[in-house]
Length: 115
Image 1 (tube, rainbow, N blue to C red):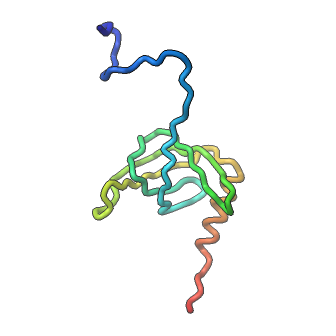
Image 2 (tube, helix red, strand yellow; image 1 turned 60 degrees about the horizontal axis):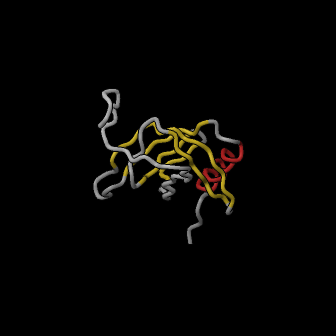
Image 3 (cartoon, rainbow, N blue to C red; image 1 turned 180 degrees about the vertical axis):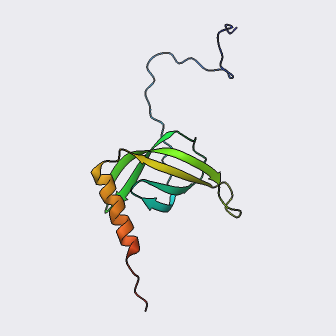
């Protein structure tokens, strides 16, 4: 029986003893737009607006990580079922992360050779 002060909607299960673990969705996402202040990504699941997510970029096999706040989420255009467009804003990104973003942006700006 639940007490009147218990405002939980669903039943929860009590865990006895220490319970260590991590939760990581860790799914790769498609980056549609990138700048030093944020990104627009396409993901398989909607992320909660205002939630803080960990973002990892791999450059030349080296990871660089920062936190990003989800600013908006919307369904992707028709034809991309179960996909969401998620706008994130980078929060206090370390210089290594910003350098990696700038390198990616500069690389994408290079003209491609026509053969």
